[in-house]
Every structure is written in structure tokens, then in C-alpha cells.
Amino acid sequence: MLSSLAVSKTHRSLLGSFAWLGLVAALAGCGGGNGSAASPAGANGASTAVDDNGPPDDAPITEAPTPPKATGNPLKGVKLWIDPETNAALRANALDKTQPDVAKLFRERIAAYSQAMWLGEWNSNVYRKVKFVVDGASAKGEVPTFILYNVPGRDCGQHSAGGLKTKEAYQRWVRKVAAGIGDRAAIVVLEPDALGLLEKENCLTKEQQAERLFLLHDAVKVLRQNPKNIVYLDGGHSRWHPVEDHARLLKMAGVEDANGFALNTSNYRSMDELLPFAKKLSDLLGGAHYVIDTSRNGAGPYGTEWCNPPGRKLGVPPTTETADPNCDAYLWLKRPGESDGSCNGAPAAGAFWDKQAIELATPTDSK
Image (cartoon, rainbow, N blue to C red; front, side):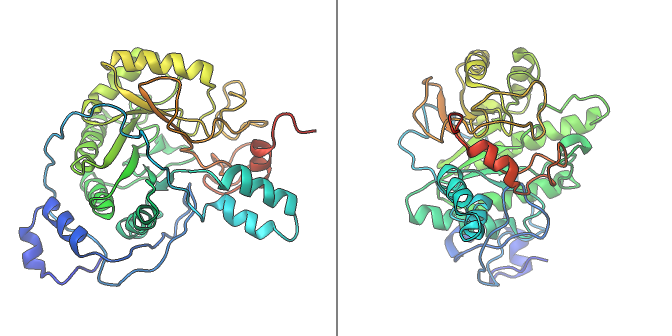
């Protein structure tokens, strides 16, 4: 499916995966492209040269060495990328003439802020997509945030079920993401819910659990071969498992080789609950750094409902100024207004839902 640069298949077969990444970084032009499946974070992109498709599907898989231990706050002073083509921005443009007040709300309260781009099987060429985004962000001195969401057995058959089919397919896919970033900077959050659901009953066999842990650690090591990449393993949230269990799971997935962990991805837990939990989890991990998803936690949770609960509010805008020296940033990992799944009257996961977006973006004190 993927074409190559001007390198014969015989010569490519002699290159290790990381040699190929370096070759792509040196020779690649502008990227882009989007997939045909529904994305949890929009599906915008641009065309690129037909001979710049990144590592081939049959590229050899080379084990990545253990990266140097991360220290300090890698996000200090970083300018977070703002995607000009989020679903919120596109929806605002569409509503300008018919519902200008709603368009203004979406544009000023949601689209104006940095939000993560989710990557998965909906990207027909993830290398081109990532490269396109990083090209644009780095040209403006900004650093994009990506969420990798494509691990085999994703979401245990729930609203966001999917992911790649094999271990090797996932390893190659991660290496394509790394090639798309090249030697530039990016923030990467790995696989929301992958650890939280790891030991869920009737989800994964023991062999599949071991494979998932291997894949997460492999992804951490591959991505951190670029010292400018900032990699966080998703660590669930404060009301999922006991904090000791989250620490155990993160350790098994290789958090010591990452920059830290991420909390509350796509969830609604409040800051007064998350911060003490995060500090305890950090302590259990030897002072690990972390980021918190504040995109939709401004009003806290709605009981135990996690799938499109009503009446929620935007949380603290994305910032690298936080309340804890071990907290590197508050980020909007979930894109506000995009559905959690087909529940509570909402469309499928990732689709922009005006009703929810209006609720999130309308200030609490509005009459």
C-alpha cells in the first residue's frame, strides 16, 4: 500500500527501522493525509508528495535501546500547538451565518486552545499525517500533542473498540509515528485506558496482557530515541483502581523510560481529587512527572457516568503553569465537544456534538 523513497526494496531490507527513520527525516517533504474511518479528534490533513510515504509496511522491526532517564519538566517554556482545523473550529465556521452566537462560543471557548490530535486506524497514512502536523507546528515554534490510540484489543469491545490486529503491525505503526515526527519536538500520550483495562475480566488473556505491556514499553523506547519527544503513559484516573494498582501497572509498562504519566484522559474527575491522587502516584513512582487532562472537568464528574454526562464544563485551559512542580502541564487531551460514544443521546465516538459543546463552553454564571 505504501510506496517508498528512491531506495530499492533490497536496500531497504538491509536498513534497520531506526536507520529508515533517519533516512525519512533527511529526505521527506511536506506531509499530511487523513483516514477514512471516524477519528476521535477530527480528520483533517493535506496532500504530500506521492513518494514520501514513510517506512514501508514490511520494514524490519529493530528493538530500540533504553533511552536516557528523563529529568525535570520538559514542557517548561513550551508553546503548545493550536490546531486551526479542529472540529470545533470547522463547526464554528459552518454556523457563522445561521447561529453566530454559537459559532462565537465554539471559536472563542474551545477552538482557540491547544488540543491533542488522536491517531489510530482512521489515519490511512499515519506517517504523512504526523509529519504534516509537526511541519506546521514547528514552523510556528509550537509543539503538538498526539495521542496514540491503536493498541490491539483497544477498549475491550466498548464504544471505542478497535486497534491494530497484531503485535508486529502495532510496532511498525509506532515507528511510522516516530518517523513522521523526525527530529522535531512532540508530546505523545500513549494509549488511553490500555493499562486501566489491562486486567479487566473477560478482556485480555494473560498472553495478551503480556503482549500489551511489551508494546507499550516498546513504544516508549522507540519514541524517546528522539530526545525532543516528550512521552507520557496513560495512567487512568483517580476513581478507577487504587493508586497502588495504577503504580504497579505503570511500572510494568515501562514508565521509568517515559517522561511520566497522564491522568484523566477523556474523563471528568475534578482537580481537588486529581491533584492529591497524582502526587501520591508520583511518589510511588519515585517522583515521576505527569500531565492532567483538564478539558472537561470544570464541573467535576456526574456521579459515575463517564460517557457523555450532562451539564459538564470546560476545565482549566491548557497551560504549563501548574500547582505542583512534578506536574508538567494541564492539557486538553480530549477535544471538547467530541462524543465519548453512542450513549446518552450522543453520536458515535469522536463526532462533534453541538449540544455537549454548548454545555461545556457556556460559562457557569451565564444566565
